Length: 592
Image (cartoon, rainbow, N blue to C red; front, side, top):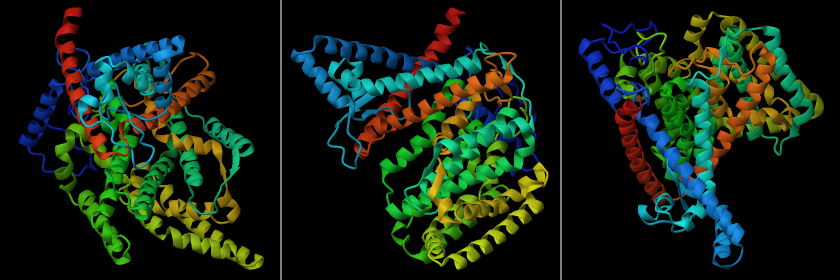
């Protein structure tokens, strides 16, 4: 895979020392690069989406997105005009249409699930039974909207608004991080300032948003959201201020996120046994909807936002490990065998030389990434490195989920002990856990970056376990949570992706790392930090809401409707890319 700036084919790629690779045969390298060249002709970057076509500064995918969202804006404007007329006319047939539209507008509206397509038909997908719905593609609301069906436009107004707003947010990303209109500045790290900001937010949360949970169970929803939240705040500050001394801590935080992927997904599938297509598709939508469009519009590779493919991969591992032989999940020996098989497969894939690349090399078009500043690094190195760091901890999350009822019962037993006995037991647990934490810190955490990366996959479970024990040691600790961190925890995916483009700066380079800061107010770094943060968090919150709204609309609990939406989405995407190809190859050169 070549960078955007340098399209020359080097003699041979330089493989990183920790990269496991198949034999570097010249024909393999040339073949892969030839595939990337072919993909680039239709606008797909090597390892991602949207590299520029040979005759234009934009890719076919980019222009296809521009065309799609332009259509959506026109349809939304027309729908608003119809709604305004219905309101103005009041009674009669128009008023009846208005009241009917208003009544149906609160229902989810089916739409495209894979491309920037207009909204689809009104379908109530709040529950498992969503009614008959459309029987064929021509009955879907996007088709009816484009045919000028006023009833469909009125009923789809809310979904059209959501798509339009989402498109404008992507346009904001492009403006801020691709046009050069927003200046950038360098990063600087001050330890006191870094921790002062975090402690100020924590103090605010403690005094103003401390809330009581509805349950005393360990690792309840509020507690895990709070956990994700405060880790995400530190993770983002680490990027903003380039706090390199916290590298090992950030690696641990990411491991904790992956642990939650194993814990949360196992808990859901093991208890609810819901392996349905709608549930699976909704999960994939949540993980990849935002990043998919970010890659298209900004010409970035998927693995630039490595958290998304990494969580997707491990979510798929959990899903299929429990789906296969699901009738045996209630039998402990069978479940133990599944966990052992998962561990064995992870070992084979990541630790046996050549296996990882044999499996993932065909997916280079999707999982390859090359930093423009390091064009000679193997395209699969980043994916190998990122996915390999936390290759085991998701399995440990599954193990913890399996033992969670027993852990909860043990804590309940401790809480019911008489005062002196309870205090003695909790004190012994506290002392032991702290001793283990200190040992881990002095043995592993203090290691230099590269040395720590080697031991991290095998030791990250230790501090995660210690934190869980300490956080749930007493009933009082389990009963309270800080709401402001829960809010941050709910939008971790959105804040992770958005930071690249409206908080930090990639210096207008596709696939560039965010090594600069977006400078809205030059000369006033702290005021700039505050203003940029307000904008950034607000936009992330909106993307979170839009993702969920469009998920309900586009991926309802109806297998047939999901299939129709997916078919329409695929067709629309092909048409939009074709239009984009024409715009890039013919319209843009004429304009130049």
